[in-house]
Image 1 (cartoon, rainbow, N blue to C red):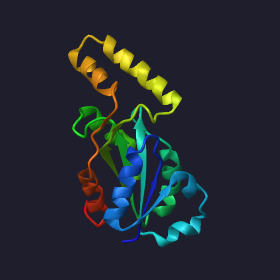
Image 2 (image 1 turned 180 degrees about the horizontal axis):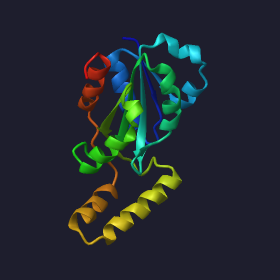
Image 3 (image 1 turned 90 degrees about the horizontal axis):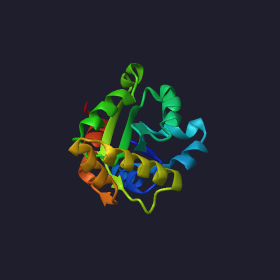
Length: 176
């Protein structure tokens, strides 16, 4: 199945997942900036298209571009891969993933989450400020879990693993 993975990445975790999936699917990988420059006919050659974006505040960054194109690609196998700093088993991830797609979008595409990490040194200034504010707010909460999360995300870490692309690959190859 001829597959294209389009991605946007700020600190490298989403790019790593896009490359892993492209290797697994023997597909092509394209940065979102380059994808935006392609004409509509470029996408005709692909049977499957995946958009991989990083998660910020429960939303996949720049996913609106993909969501805008997806209705024209309904005959293809479509997926969105959200890459974030929370572990896959975090209940907040499940909640965010349930609201990522509309009911209509669920008819022709599927969403996946892959845990990535944080690299504070590679974050752009606005993201750094937002993370500091979020961490500070969590530290002020009374519940222990929030304070633990604040300590965890205040440091750089990498919890990405190639195994998390397998559900995406399985779906692209015809699974549900």
